[in-house]
Image (cartoon, rainbow, N blue to C red):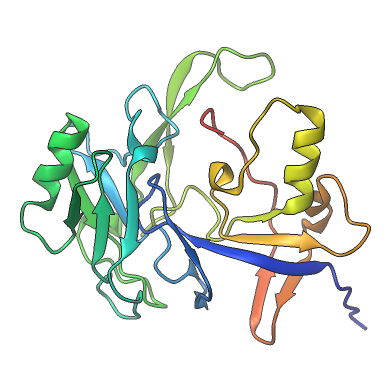
Length: 239
């Protein structure tokens, strides 16, 4: 017989309408089999090599975190992604509905890009031809001991039909942030830096990297949401 243990409480929800841009904190979210509706609904695609722009390669995309994306209205179900508003580093705003949106973003980034979208319905029907196949992105590996590669850039494939790096939901606990602060007091371990979707405050007594012990288990949030914890989240150089 399956048993349930109370592990903690959700303290914040986050969604990132455009991959690798800053996102928005939510009071509530609809969760589908593809994560929070509207999360990573859009991405920038390099006009030269067709690769998805990601902050995992900061040498190529050093400014992405200076852009912020929010939905104009609620993210909706269906084949087409809802329109978004992007705030550029200089405060200029552009919407995905503008015909010159990609041109404005290209000028801001000094690189030709196209704003592409994936539908956020339960079936995740692509709203463009691009996400119908596995898209590629790049990751820079710093010159550090213990990594698979050092001081080089490698390609990796995104899950077919999405702009996620791997899993569709990223969960983080306040205990992990607290433990990182203990290990490196001079660091700034803020929620925004880790870009989670769900932040959980563990129940009394939960400390350290407690979510690592949840791998292989199913988390229940409320009456309907069930999350299968598949593994720890790999961190990139920007974290």
